[in-house]
Length: 211
Length: 117
Image (tube, rainbow over all chains, first blue to last red; front, side, top):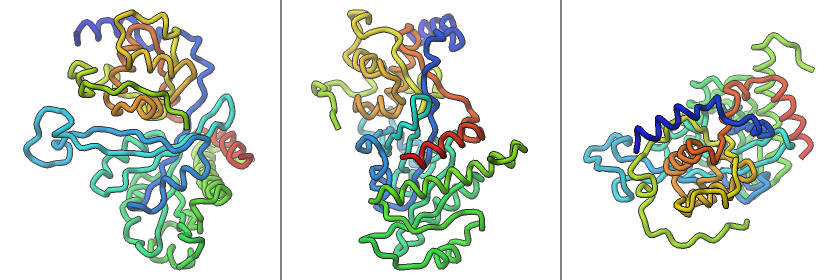
């Protein structure tokens, strides 16, 4: 089966795929990260045109670095869930917002999410600031643009963004903002800041001047 | 959200893929766009309900993540099944330009689009 299939694949070949599929929109992607229950799905849902969907990946215990990995089946695998939303920018472009799995031990799944992404939004609960450290570290190490958004639980700011910036020691070109994850306008503004940052970086890299 | 009703699945997910856990090309990103090249009626009569469901869903270009979510299949299984359907010419997958996220023109377009929401 395996070899028959790969033979067939070789014959079909990616390059041989019909060109009729060119009306496919360009897919852009943003990663929404942060600690457990910080409001990632709320953030995604506030601006997504569809109710956030959940996609699940099964990973083997082996890949978690734990002994006793058996064959892959529902029993020995662990399920990682990621919520995501979609925004149709136009017939030519779609933006996807992917929430990272909440549990820290699944952070390796972020590579999958971050690959080809514009950058990230790190949602912060200022009462549990340390929960966002892995996300900040991750985007810094990856050197992709990101925005730190302090979620206003119950619409109340418990800390000034300046305090959060100092505590996190994020680079000066990384925006730190207040954001009520339930409000579309706040989420929209956060995404604008992220894409502006990505655009600045891309413009500098390409040597072209910004508009 | 309208979710098409699926009959309860009585086989374990990886039985659907005959034990295979890797798509022939495991490079499909979550956001890769899947599009049907044939109507579902044109599928082989022996096609599984999952294959039929995917082809039906992808009559409009749909992301890999959304196919998985709407079909309630794990991501890995979805990629294998999509790969199979690509191999038989029922689907095409557009994995996108690798540098779309750093393309100035695309980012400008995206920024305008988000501002206009």
